[in-house]
Length: 101
Image (cartoon, rainbow, N blue to C red; front, side, top):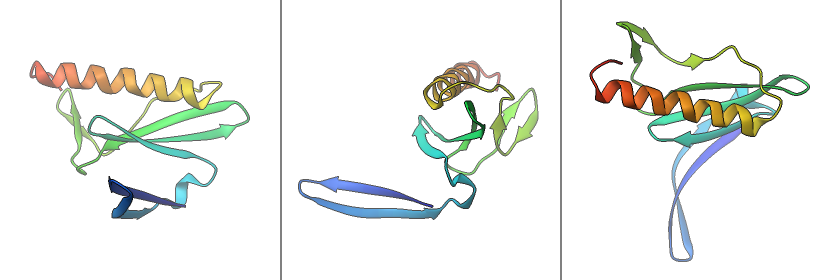
């Protein structure tokens, strides 16, 4: 599976970046704020979200660096898993703006 990032201007679309996502077969990828979110189904109706910074930098929580984050909660839909990821990312943004990442 490939992720295409396009810039659209009028009737023309220009591919800005192409990335192969072999681990997302049957899954979904999206961007929210400065994070890339990968949604995947582990079992029927067990959706998870894994997210990482788009710039490739680690996320630092209490002085510990994480390349990616995966909350071990299974959601019944991909929408619920995405919504939870948004909430965690929003919390990370608030914490980092206060100097606590």
